[in-house]
Image (cartoon, rainbow, N blue to C red; front, side):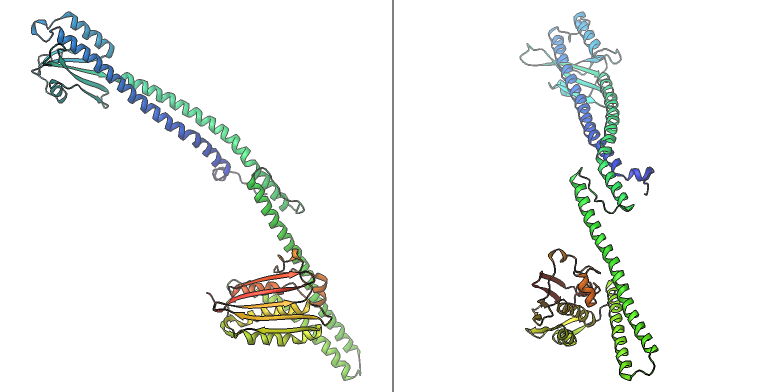
Length: 482
């Protein structure tokens, strides 16, 4: 038994593909879910942080506006500075207070105080708009909130509160979650790999049974039937395999029987000829008539042997896929008439009435030699396997339409058992072995006929009832189809 070990065969195996499929089925959804959750977490966290910052900035801006912090004399208000300190301790950011002339009044970093700041967010906030943005590259949220006294009905903008807050803690949390997700993914891959191995071993086991069963049959246990009932697929495979083995066994038995029969058929004429020749040699002064009789017997034996050899040669020629057909326009009416004329002596000898019925003149493009051989076999079989009590008959009819011509060969013979109908075209197969041996059949005639018909892109069908006779229907195109 051939061993399929090694890394490359394993990669190509069903087991490996099942393992990979199971891992992918678990990992891909898990990866997508993790990516969506992480992305949603980061977006949600940033949104919440931005809302908090805007809310705190709004509260602080209102406190600054109501405390008149924007007046130069109140620039050192301890209350507002305390609020700013508390806010910065919570959010770890930078706060700028800008007046309506774009001058920085206060900077928690003490870097840009009394400097002028001109930026889009400050300009828009001086106009009364609350502005917020996220810088993903530097990882901070920046808001610009207009300072407006809530009690002032004119809503005059006194200045702008610019607040920049780092989002490093959100990114750290996201990175931590990614690490956890990576660990979970590794565990999922390991777990799915383990379960994938177990599942694949279980799923592939029936196919191993199939392999072992086939190996057992190859080892010579041909009497066993292969049957693995684990899956519907294995049952179907087993049924088809058993049918194939059954046909192969029939074919093998038929071949062996054919070899035995042909050996016997070839040997018998040779033995007869040797006996006749020895008899002639041993007779001295025998009359001429006796010599002529013996020579006629030898000639008959030679013809018998020639027929067997010709059948074998015909079948070999039919088997060649590249066998060329010598296509020509042939008068089918005349061809069948000639065949029946040649077979009339056999019909007379068998006391079988031979009748031909032609409905119209038919000319077709065929290989005359091969098609003659096909029709000869059908009609000759109908004669030989018929009644020999004077009541037997063979009816041959010829008809045609615009595309095909049809030949029907009907007889009143012994018929074919229903179980044998599927096998009659198999080479070496004979329905009635004893009767076939008596009349010299080799089991090749119908195989030759079917091959010849198929080579012409035609079709052949059989209808038969045991004891009631047999009908063969042949259909062949009028024009040869390349």
